[in-house]
Each structure stands twice: as C-alpha cells, then as structure tokens.
Length: 185
Image (cartoon, rainbow, N blue to C red; front, top):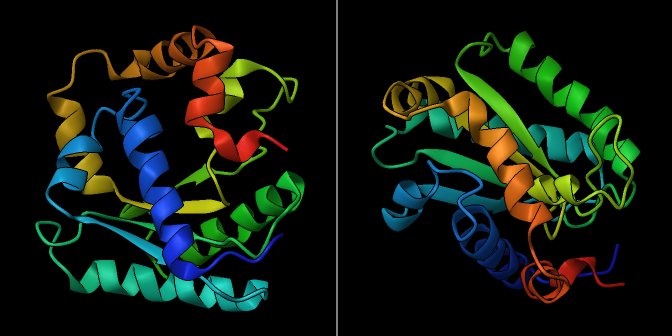
C-alpha cells in the first residue's frame, strides 16, 4: 500500500464519512455523533498485524474508560496493511476473537470497511459492495448499547441494507467517481 501521512489518512476518512456514510445516509446514526465530535479516527501507522491488534485493544479500553457522550465510536484505520481484501477479512476473525477474549462480546461489535470490500456471493464490480468500500481498511468499533438505543427509535432498521443497496445502485458513474475517488486505479 502506498505511504500516506496520518493527517491525510484522517482527512480522507473524514471526507468519506461525511460524503458517503452520512451524505448518502448509509448509516442513519452517524450524523449526530459526527456533528458532536464523538467519532474518533485512529490511524495505525504500523505494518505489523500484531501492532494493529494491540492498537484496536487500546481503543476498546479507551471506549471503556470514556463516556459515550464524549466518545461514541472509533474508526481504526490501517492504511499500511491489507491491500488484499481476503487478508483483511481473515484479520476480522482475530478482532472478533479479541472482543470475545476480553469479555467485551455484547459490549462492542465491529463493522468492516475496505477499498475492495466484496460481500459473499457478489461479484467485485457489484454496486452493493460500495456500501462498505472506504479509502483504507477500517475497523469500526461500535458500542452495542448505543446501537440498541437508537434502533428502538428508528423505523424499519431491518430495511437499512436494502435501502443502502438501492441508493448505491442508483448512483451515476459521475457520482461514483466523485464519492469514491480512492477506487479509481
């Protein structure tokens, strides 16, 4: 993966968050914590998977120590690892294992994003994969209690994935280029 500075990585992820995730309403729960500056973007500058796992663990600890009113969620960005989606996908098992091993299952969950994200059973060029494509590999640490709280007040949360797929399938080629410049190779 090409070398990108930490400030550039943060800026690109913030832009993606605002333009794609919030702008397209792919996650209807992201706008408020973004507006309230309760989303942390942590960039792991290491090229070692062990170091990334350690940093994810430290971010989980930070979430434990910080009230949700101050820090709702964390995006752990790995710009120097996982150029291959399959490697990233396998590493997700280690992150899930870390959550279980630390007794945080039911407290946190991980949402996954990658420049080459490909849902099982889809072709890499299928538009629905855009819902989880990001400028870099990202591990989104989500507080389950916060998610349960907002889902209680959201109509038809089960329909979110289908609405997201419809949304990205209806983007024009120009919109895709503008919103996902990191996909142009």
